[in-house]
Each structure stands twice: as structure tokens, then as C-alpha cells.
Length: 334
Image 1 (cartoon, rainbow, N blue to C red):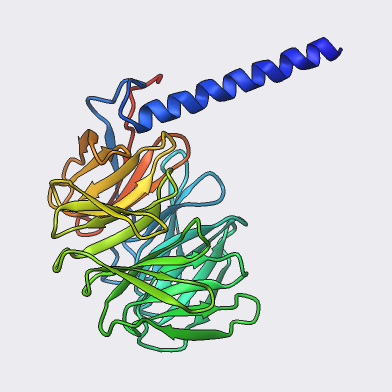
Image 2: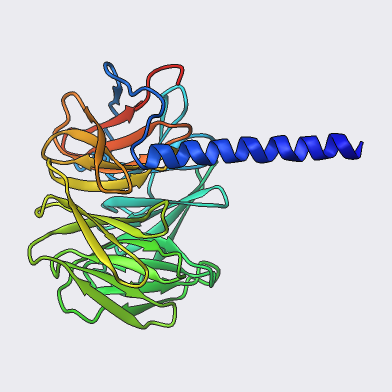
């Protein structure tokens, strides 16, 4: 039995090592599964909801093996058979935008038109929370280890700290005036990292409210930020035509990406996927900043936000075209 146990452990270690090596090979742009060449993107057209602003915006992988998205006055869910279900948001003209999945089988969303954030469970139950400033224009939502939820607020030029148990919320002002606070992410260092679009900066805030700001090229128009597989923060710069990488120590690198990068996510293959607003496409980028694949989204008007689905699929909202795209980056059977 002892010998069998040792063989089992050795086999498991070998398999794990092979998987890790394959992931590193893909992330470094090495040989991997063949890329999809044709028919790689399929479109889904959500139903029209009550609002005239019914274009899909935010998108995230969520509970029930589904992808969830926002429709301004409703939340949508796409199941694995591409069937769409919508849930109306209680507040009129909510202007639902950004969405973030919570580990405990719920999805949180920002109501940019009402100064609230909301929560929807797998069964469609909705709860809303008011932020301190009615004109906050909430954007990114970050779950922190202190149990609070941190919300980047474009209109309030602040980051709100919300206790989801009591609903109590406090604004923490961002040092740079009129920064246009956008996307946020929890860094490996336990701090909130966020985008200052108008100020062309990347910001960092500790959970006790201490800020550090890192300037980019003026006019770069940064948009979205995520934690990469290398534990650095990666972000897009729309007008500069670049993606950026910043370590938790503040070391900055930038890489040119043609086509207007906006959304960014990390795939299951440990590659970065970036949607290209001006090109109507999605690019795959390795950790050296090199484009290792690119796919057109047929008929896309302006791809906006992007997320990793279940498996290797990538999902994109085309807000101006009123569509959602499901991209299969690898050939069938890979």
C-alpha cells in the first residue's frame, strides 16, 4: 500500500508539473493547442428591455455555469445553451454598467445612473445598496479581505467603502481632482489598484485609505485593470494604443497594441485577452506583451468589456452594436 501511495503521489506531481509547464509555454508564446481559424466568434442578441439604453455593457462569469451581463435597466444571464434570461432592476434608470462575480454565488453590479450598487443571486434575487454620493457614478467593484466592498466612483472622485452587512458606506477621496476614477482590482499586495482615466494615472489605495499614484503618458486614456498570472497589474491605454504592466512595487512597462485596447481579462491559458474597440476584434497577448493571436468579431461596432467564461471561451460585450460575443480561441477538440 505504501508503494502504491508513493506511485500515486509521484504520478500526481508529474501531471501537475506537465500542466504548469504547458501553462507557462502558452503564457510565453510557445507551442500550444492550435488556434481557431474560422467561425471562432458567435453572437448573441439580448432582448430589448424597458430602457432605451438596453445595450449590453458589463459582463462576468457567474453562478450556475453562466455568464451574466448588464442591460442598463436589467441584468441578463446566458446559460451554456446560449439561452438568455433577464431580471429587471428595481430602481428606474439605474444605468447598470460594470459587473463583478462574488465567490459566494452572486454577482454585484454598478448602477451608474442611480448612485447605487446591487447584488443578484443565482435565483435572481436582487438587493440594492446606496452610496454616500447620489451622483457617484459607480464603476469598478472590488471585494477586499477586510469584508468590505470597495467601489470606484467616477462622479464623486472617490472610492467608497461599503459594509455589505449593514449597508453603511463611506467615501474616501482620491488625491487628484477630476481624475475620472474607473476600473479597480484587488492587488496581490492586498491594496486596491484602480484607473484614473482623465488624470492618466494608475492609483493604489491601501485598505486604511493611503494613496499612491503612478503617472502614465498624458492623454493615454487608461480604462481597465486586472491582476495578471504573473501577480502584476495589467491595464489598457485606449488612446495611447498600449497595454501596461505595473508591479506592486510600482515598476511600469508598456507594450503597443494596435486597434484601441479597452477591456482586458486573463484566460484559463494564462494569456491576456484584450478587446480592441476600433478594430472590432479580440487580441491574445502573452506576458512579454506580444500579440499571439487575434480574432475579428463579425459586425462588432465597439467591443467594450471582456471576461473569461467557463472553459477556454472568452465573452465580450459590444455595447454600441447591442450584442454579446462568445469567442472560442482554440480549435475544436483542443
